[in-house]
Every structure is written in structure tokens, then in C-alpha cells.
Length: 256
Image 1 (tube, rainbow, N blue to C red):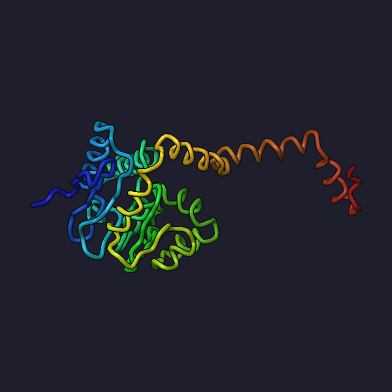
Image 2: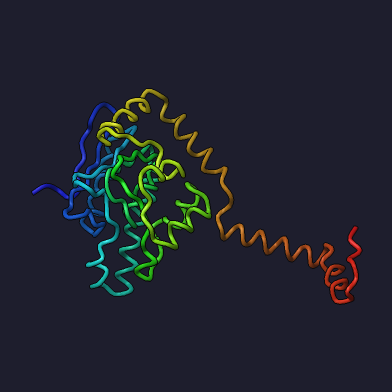
């Protein structure tokens, strides 16, 4: 019986991590433990420049959270499970190498969140992507509400998350959810991409990633605080008092 997560060096600097938990690679504790083990092994080896995350199952990359597991746990266990899933994605996103998700099947819920935590995504023609958590009374809580808007924009992210629809491969490419679409074997395409990536300086590549990521807007909590500070300043020192008084007096405001 195969391990639910295995890994191997495909070529110098390139690792393939393969999920194999029939029937759909549900991201239960066994796969999450396996992914953590793969990340541990890669960190200890010190020779990984590109890590490809793939599936051994036909028709599935990963079908999201283990719903059966969710049906048997209490709130404390749910928190621990969610934290483990988030930790995998955060470790992958912050790893000292480039990661590529090779998707040729369903990547739903936590499966899409796993793919979005990778640096790049390669899609086959059969792939479909979705975050259907609202159908369960939940939200995409392992990075989905944060990473999806950064990839496709706020409006498209709402369209995908609020409708819980599945996005086909061609649309995913068009909106930037995936970076390459191939009619060939998706792992073969990911390996070809990795062969290009390993020829460049990894420290320089990681610097590019950091520079791009820091150029995004502030985190929401910081943005909301900045907004509150600006509004308070306008009320105390700006022209809000004149605007309010003019509104009440039904006259045009006398702004400077």
C-alpha cells in the first residue's frame, strides 16, 4: 500500500511530492502529516530549488477538507485541524524554494488553497478549481479568502467563493488563477518549467518573490486601522466639521 504522501528527487534540485489517498485526496490528518513530513525532509536536505506538488489519483488533485472527519470532531478539534492545514500552506508559501502545483483534476476547497500556496500553478485540460465552503456553512479558512483575491482580484474572487462554482481550466488561465495550461501530461509540463527555473539563482528568485509580495496592499487589519486614523484626523483637524454644519444648514460647504 503506497504512502499517502511520497517524495523523490526527479533531477538535481527538483523534488516531486505526490499525494495518494483514494478516492479523492481528501486533506485529512494523514495527508497533512505527510505534507509536513515532505516539507521537513526538503528543509533537512537543503538541496531543493523547485518542489512540484502532484497527485497520483486520476481526476483529482485534492478534493478539500475531509468532510467525514469534520463530522466527528468538536470545536477544539476543528481548530486544531484548521491550524494544521493552515500551517502546511504557510510553510509551503514561505519555503526557501519555488513550488509548483501540477493540477489535472479537481482542486476544491483545501485542495485549491494548497495549490494557491504554491508559487506557480500548472493546469491540465481536465482541471477544475473551486472554493465551495459556503455550501457547508463555512468559509475558505486555510488561506482561500486571502490568496484568491490576490491572484484573480476582489470581484472574481467573490464570484468564485460566493457562488461555490467550479472554474474550468481555460477560465482559470484567463483570470490568472493558474499560470500555464497544457494539453500534455501536467507533471511533465511542471518538470519542464522546473528545468527552466533551476538554471537561475535561487536567492535572486526568492528576492523577486519577496519584492512582489511586499508590493501588495496592507493586510486588512492594518488597512482598517489606517482608515480609522484618517477619519479621526479629518474630524479633529480637517474639514469634517464644516461639512457637517453645512449639511445641517442645507448650504454648500465652505471648503478651503
